[in-house]
Length: 78
Image 1 (cartoon, rainbow, N blue to C red):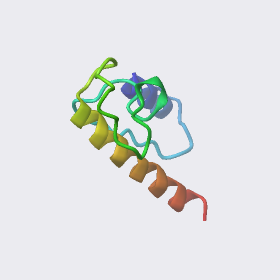
Image 2 (image 1 turned 45 degrees about the vertical axis):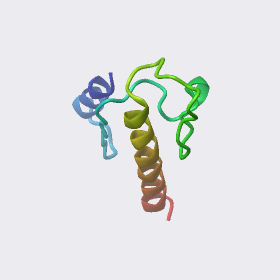
Image 3 (image 1 turned 90 degrees about the vertical axis):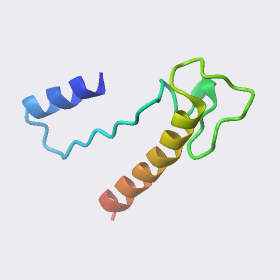
């Protein structure tokens, strides 16, 4: 779905830089919500992999995605 959104933005001349960061072995909701993969926290061990991916993949993506967000904000909110 994210790739489709990027394609649509690029096709329609979206005026800003678009960067899609893809993580292998990651499910939905790795960054927060009911699955409890709260950025920048690692998942608690009592939460399973109910929304896809693995605990390790979701944890790595959650931490890295938070770094990506902070980097984006630092670059664009000067």
